[in-house]
Length: 239
Ligand code: HEC
Ligand code: HEC
Image 1 (cartoon, rainbow, N blue to C red):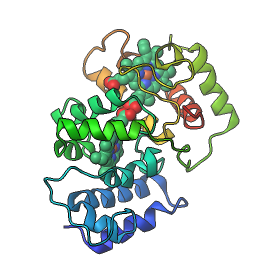
Image 2: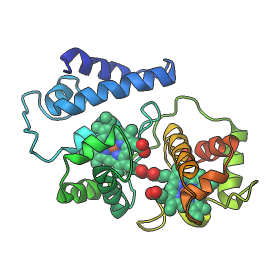
Image 3: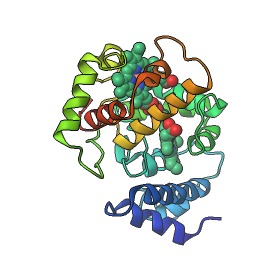
Image 4: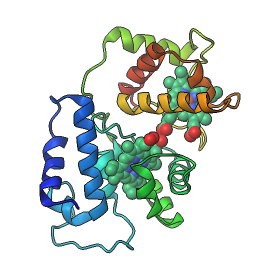
């Protein structure tokens, strides 16, 4: 079971950016998970939540946005260290649908599935509405990408590239800001999240032939350099 010590570690780790990323990210996520399972008391002790330390919330209560913020950043900016997506300003139907997919297991995530399982459809709707209305600065990058990488990503976003990879903007909106409930905003997403997500689409494409015109199909055409460049470009581009 999590202890106060775990939650202190989270507070400590969330403010450090000089440690080995992958090991560090895993540890920080593990600590965040511990927090998640105890909900707010541990969070409040860690100083991560605006809720007073005396707050007790039963497991039946709707989760507060402070829990989400512990991983997704204040106002939902996302976190490059934790590999969590930006939620701020995203289409509310897209967000609510993502939560329901985590809940029913059609979108796999060891982290988000247990979170979503506690949410009713009303909770999902309320949380999605809240985050879609937030304005947040870009998440802090662990390593600022090079100008060359960013411009390669910009070219891919605008015009597509090798292996018949289509322009990202053709589906995700003219500046990656998203288009309706189906095409999420990809501008503003932390680089670690975008890379992980594109790799997940690629893995899915290997498991079963992707539907034409789906993101799984787009990702299956992309090489490592294209994934890195596009993720870099979107991580420095405000949606
Ligand atoms: C312990 C850390 C953690 C907590 C707490 C957490 N999340 Fe997440 N969330 C993640 C991670 C990691 C992902 C990326 C999952 C993936 O794509 O595999 C994610 C993904 C999501 C997505 C998908 C967004 C997209 O663009 O694809 C939504 C929506 C989301 N979370 C909402 C929430 C909400 C609402 C809460 C609070 C009830 C919450 N999360 C709490 C870690 C967390
Ligand atoms: C043919 C249309 C199409 C094109 C072109 C396209 N995408 Fe997508 N993309 C989608 C759809 C649809 C989704 C949502 C998939 C889902 O939720 O399962 C998506 C999801 C994503 C996600 C996950 C976002 C999140 O919040 O979970 C990333 C990252 C992404 N796309 C990056 C890119 C990049 C980079 C390019 C350009 C190289 C690109 N996409 C081009 C259709 C497209």
